[in-house]
Length: 330
Image 1 (spheres, rainbow, N blue to C red):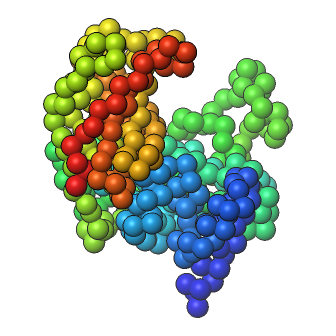
Image 2 (tube, rainbow, N blue to C red):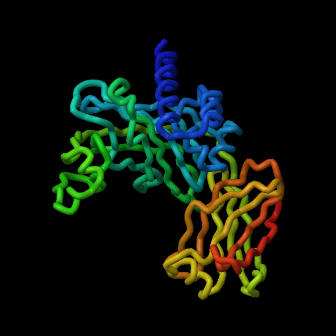
Image 3 (cartoon, helix red, strand yellow):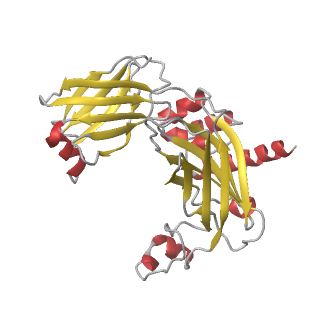
């Protein structure tokens, strides 16, 4: 009965999350049809084709591990992970006290793995009209841990140590509100600094039973662009959660990518069915002329064909696109 209750509550929260995110009715129906994948991962998947396909292909480690301290419970729910990236959904719930809290925001969430500690990128419901009743927020967190030659850890620890009632502070420890910060929208909205509770919300996760799929790796693919520039894709790594490409376009092109005030060179992937996989981030590799791109993952694409498309003079009328077929995905 406890499981049924928690699932029912999660369904209500998920419906509220869909409503506050202003997604389309069609997508809202899709979300509800995917129950009991009752987590904010479903919402985020609407913005990430790779994550969406991972969920549809059951590449999700369903988990329910929680820690409670100072009247607040931190719960880690569903996980999608491989050797490139980990994404998980979480909940924060007030069990008792903290009646003055208008919302919940973990100031930072960290992951301990393989002797390291990294802070995740987190997103959650900043405006939750159901909070007064539910005392719960749902969110997602992502870390590009890029393990490379390291193996997937069997165990990881996810923890938070400070929880505010709205997002304002980002560093650990007591904060002093400056006059400039008082002009920020968040501060003016509340008219005060966030209420803060400190504690130890630490959960250990056993990932040894999680299904993992190997990354497909291709090396040294050289081609000439429409502007006669020689480009080498030093490595193409297609993982279930993302595609990572390290590109050597020469010093001039890489400087355009890394140093220009506006985007002049951009890339995307396209499979044989015409599905685009956008770059989620890109930048230079320190100490080299290489550029690294991270794309939505095409791992679960029904097409075996994949193309790397490089756009030069991006955004202008005379932009040049070069389309290069990559080795078969599988």
